[in-house]
Length: 400
Image 1 (cartoon, one colour):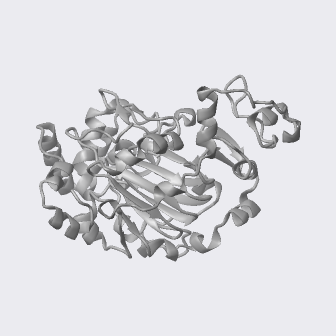
Image 2 (tube, helix red, strand yellow):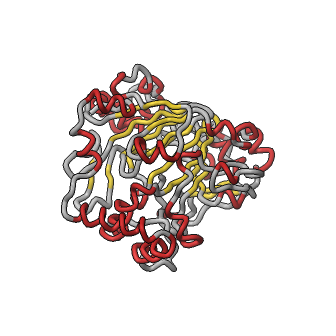
Image 3 (cartoon, helix red, strand yellow):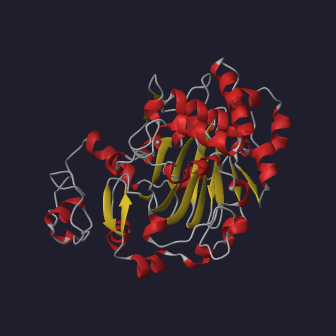
């Protein structure tokens, strides 16, 4: 909730069940009861309907050809060789994290109730946000996405499972290589705590700076629907992209998109879907469009990373999509030049390979999507079962 000057509300306010009652600081019982028995309005009915219609069935009966592959775990070599460009769910690694057995809404409230977290465009104490999540009727419930959670919660985060002794969590094994680590303290925002009630989530978007991501569910469950992107493939049904690809436009709410486009999307080539449950982690390949719906109240951790095989794509993005670069501090004037410099110092051979890939992409070379679609359906099924952004200013920060 914002005041007239655009700043977040005072920390001492209490959620009263509706935005109006909260603003007026009155109990929700004092809300006026308006007789609407003779009122007929599509304009008023549609958002009300979207806020109350059941969404759980959209995650059911997923066609076999669309199902995201589930695996127990992968080695880094297996990931780079066969899976770096495909979505998949791992069922084992997250269950080794200390936070997996230690976190629940009740336990987080006990320890962090008076800590302020970012929920989209507002900063709320955790206790206020939880009050909101358990008593609201919003069409698009506010989603807690906090990039500074590790510092606020005094968490110890390791860079890999092997270094995880004493850590609260670490990247799952296949995602332990992240080329943006060469940037040190100058790397863009890359990790977030995600908390939200049922029906909350993220509308269609790609992850920032051409990075890949992993999203680990600590409690609850999430429905994912995803599409690859390419210059020769249109965006998902109901999604529109600006000419310079800097803006993604889609229906206002997740419910609105599901109601209008879900059935068509399931029949669209490239569509993959899946439910990531408690203790599981989903891989989001670089450049894939994805929509995420919380099927129940959920707590998750997500991180963005750059695999070795995607260095050329990230270089191309940083060079050619400057208007869409996000998450770097204002002190970093040229992220492309900085990444080049640090890679040259750390791994000149990898940089050379990345520059060669950049040249190929610049000349119109086929992307991974085109390469994959050239193979037979049987071969693709054998390879994994798929058949055919964050500015420094929090007010404008994108949800990954």
